[in-house]
Image (cartoon, rainbow over all chains, first blue to last red; front, top):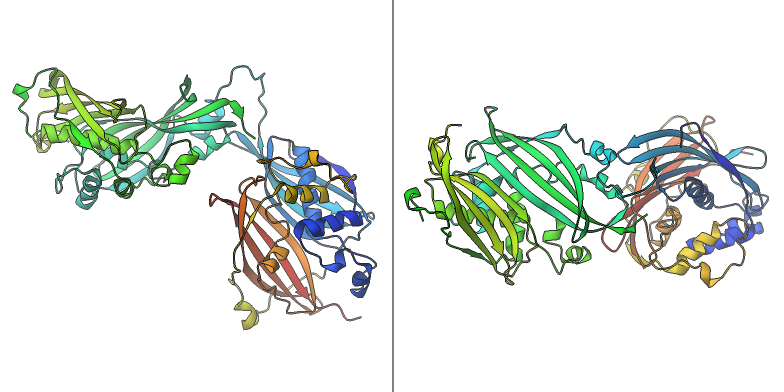
Length: 292
Length: 145
Length: 160
């Protein structure tokens, strides 16, 4: 899809049966939509088509045109003029923008419904999320694509986060773990896991993984490692610079395993490097179950 | 316990640490570590992901292994390197037994050090976590930043 | 529809309605509900297809506006009173944010609220009141499936 591309104009004849079916579908029997006398009492020559029916038809035509790899995420319609039941309407649209983000294109469209005289009775906009077609023949499935790596910003710093360490934090941690050494001012060896923006949901690049079109069969932390230059202690204020350094895959018991490894550099309040950590996460996919 | 470096030998076992994680413990850990992934407290969510119930946080198991090591080496030493690999999931209300063994004695920047192999076992004696650590026998205060 | 221009202050009794929330409603997504919806917007041949083979199977995805096809209608069903300060009241437009697909077999919970009320005056001095009614919908896992907003336009007809 390209900006400026037109959706093929489609002709739609609105019948009374359509409106009656719509009334049943939405459970609303406002008579102006199917009763001529009620319409006449409102000064209309005949029953009026529901605006929301026209919007739903625009959504259907858009989905039909965009195909299976597209998902409608937003639709907005203004009902500018009434259309009469029995009218011959034309529906059309234009792609106004295509923005690649991660493994998908965000496609913005302008949509309209026009009456037989060409007057636009409904105007609207829509946003589609479209998975990009594989440029080359499918062959062996690769999950760790260049697009995924770009979305995770592999190789560049994904963010910096600052975490103070207090004695209360260490005591709460030790209490939760069941470690009796309360009041000890030096942080326990696994404490680096607390100083991680992804574990804390403060950095979320992983939504791009929702775009992998296969059923998930499991996942979680794969490994965690740390090398300290010195012990961390209460009173430290640690700045964590995190980046994805590796994305790779292999087949395992639970299916195709996609590993993402992040490297964190931890700096103290003097700017000295105090630790390096590697955080490995894995997601398992069933390549036999492709999902929409 | 405060082991003396001179008394250590390759092959020595660390005293085992037995844990029975509870769901309350998982909730306390989630709060202490700011890790609120639902798989650790939301039963329906865990079941929908194919597990029998909520699972123990990997980093909590890492913390158990950390406690195993620091209880053994005492405040006269510090853990310079520490790594864990999660092989199988563990569930609350089940025994989780933490083990460690000395696999090497060496020096780090002139300081005495040991390498340890660590692991956790579930009630079926399957290894659920594997880990390694390097412990340097000098007090934290003496470590130059 | 007349074109609005200036923006006078909203009467207090209308301003007080902003934020009103309806009771919630929970409903299962039955295959026939989706089938009825699809037939109502289907191409040309629409009338009369009750072929069971066409009824969507469990787990199949409903069309994108199915989760709330008409928010002004849904709000009325949920007991939220649509303000009608002026004699003519029409549906000015609808917006849908679609967060997740809805499948046959899902259970949806909806709640409606008056999100905004604003007032304009037309070029020839007639008042117009715009009420935005917002319906939020979640599935059985507590996940948001979408938000639908309908704008009710209340106005005075031009004098004959």
